[in-house]
Image (cartoon, rainbow, N blue to C red; front, side, top):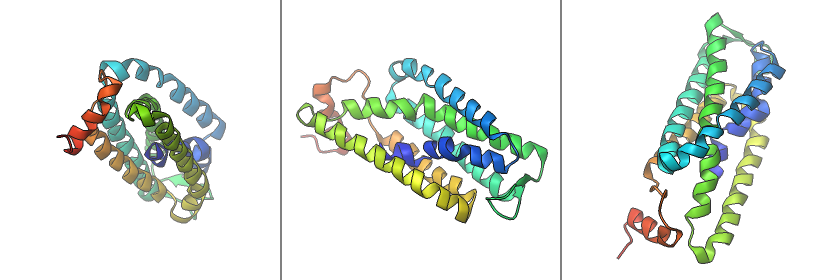
Length: 206
């Protein structure tokens, strides 16, 4: 749950308009497009979460987010000129700004169709029945802790390291890719057998 926030989705939604305003784009237009992409791409997850399973959504979503954030960070660092992140940043080439905008929207689409909804489903079904309510509550708490960290520290990071902030998000996305690859598939597994499923994954089954 916390990793779902640390990949940077809320940073894009909270501070994306600031990023695009610095690049000379219309901040309100960006916010409208971001919200529309977020809503539209959540719908396919309702189908694929059962058709392809949770694990594949974790893996492909994290891969797409990793590519998007790392590309955005590198283009921002090496493809823009400006005296600071708080000032207007000019892309060195006209296509750079367009690619950066596409990377942001691609990230949002990847998140909305995979890690956004799937994490909530996965966390709701993996815990033992006798501890399920308490564990889900704790996992939800960590989600909000992650949200707090993103809201508090993203402005600081943007001011200090600029587009390097998105490389940091890229590292968390790569961690999400590794975790998604490791996690067992839970689609079609009865709740009573979840403990055995994770025992096998951890190698602790008797």
